[in-house]
Length: 184
Image (cartoon, rainbow, N blue to C red; front, side, top):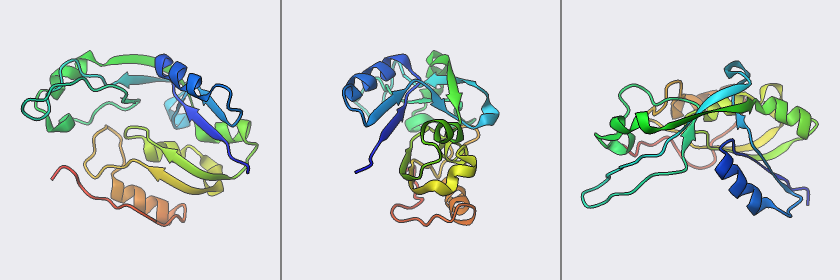
């Protein structure tokens, strides 16, 4: 079977962890770059969205870790519907990381091969990452994205608009899932 897993992780600590997991597997490559539209440039500011004091429901307290985005939160967004979230945003670390569009990746690493399945979780930039395939978008058979009806990040394309674009521009059909709000 011709299966290959390619993972992109620009944060050094997470890149090291994922690389260790992939070690010894010739069918899994982890690269220390972010995927972003060419218009964002060769280096993008990545915000590591870690809270020093997140309080969810009464009696719960924990630190969130692992999420990062090249997009800032949109004005007025309250993460996890928590009123204290905005006070934490200044604590987010920001790193300048190398970035490339998926078109570059397919050209250089896959010589224009077809992609059977593409999973994108880019914290608000999911459609932008897919669109960065450029002329190679037609080579993708299936794609899974994390989309939101309630826009979280500045520049994020809302779920319904992504579905419309994927249907009209790229001839995809929704197989599972729907645009539903969890914020209600």
